[in-house]
Length: 207
Image (cartoon, rainbow, N blue to C red; front, side):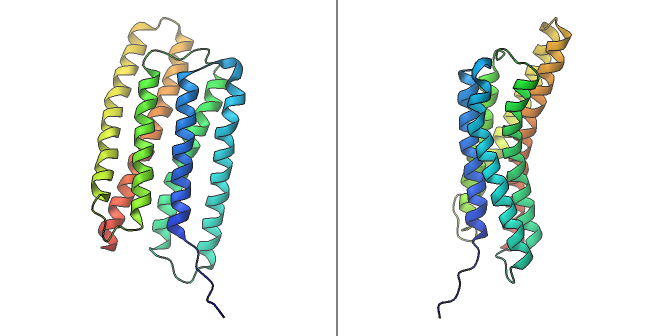
């Protein structure tokens, strides 16, 4: 009788990373063509991706309970999965935030901020894809470095946007609203960097 193939944790993590990439692309398009009237409808595709991610996370956790052998330590898999889930949750959460805060239009430079997020998410997606080959990979460390550079650029951009917001916006409600939005943009970038740093640490640990 053929031996049952074990659960592919790397493929499941890659699935989550692919979901994050797809969701970031949809969010970027939503921001570039922003329309409050169609926000809820356009957000549904992102919500569906996030729900699919929840299913994958649940499956990974269930497999960790029953698997006798895992390719890397269980707690390390949980770390990566949690951070990938955080990225996807952050992207999904922005759509709800736009709606609940009644964001009627994007502020200047918001698409640039979103572009940084998309680049960081793509970097994480590529790093996760390469992670299964970490012992022989020629590109993994450079992919991780790229994400870190993007996050640093995002830190500078975040500071500049906050400074501009506080100096130029006269409506206190708009200040509160957009500080909250910018904070969440920054949080997604931070989670991307965390995911990359976790992978970097695991490469060292398992080499």
